[in-house]
Length: 89
Image 1: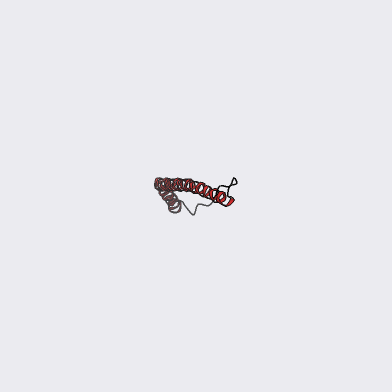
Image 2: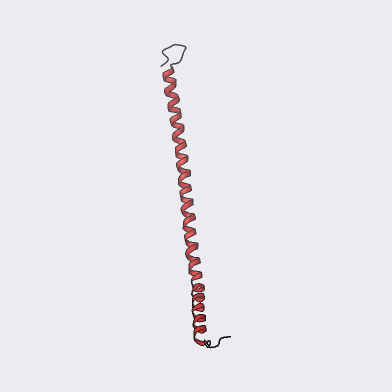
């Protein structure tokens, strides 16, 4: 309180300054929370899309893997069954 003195009360000034900084910190924390929530949402969207791409790619490559494995098995079977093992150079 000033009480009519020409000097201001340092305690009152300090209270006002603290209240001002608390208000500023509150606004900063709200904006930081909003940025943090946005970042978490972006990461979630990124990982969800990455998972979707991986699932689609694995389903697309599954027939190719089956063809390659079956071809290798048939090749080995053909070599074992139809080559002459007595023919030595």
